[in-house]
Length: 179
Image 1: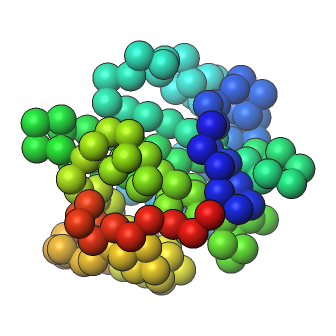
Image 2: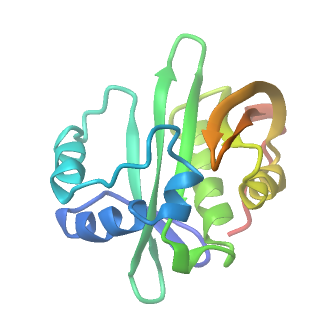
């Protein structure tokens, strides 16, 4: 659907759900994106999530991320909380552990931001990231996101409280991605 140099964003299919469940049940992956208790997801949970969305979206858009070279499903990204009056939305991403540190996440987020500004005509995209997720923070900063705030000691992980950073990117700050 939306293609970059090495990955594309496309609609989810039922065939993705087994891998999505496995990726999301990886403890390290889960600890970087899930604020709640680390309870395993069931395939039925993912199927229920999958069945909850459709092409005539209510402002939430979910994309599967796959490699162009071999069409392997490697993760997902999406948009939620779209506010059409004020023209902003929140975005997020996850990748399977074997696909991190290869530039896929930054490229996927760039494509997602392009979609937000180009197709949805948003003025701003925002996200939240745990302060200890330095890899994600670097990726977002590479795309132009700036820290706008901090939710102090918002998340409890591994015996201590951690801050959650709120980051945002305005359409006027976005220079696009290299294709």
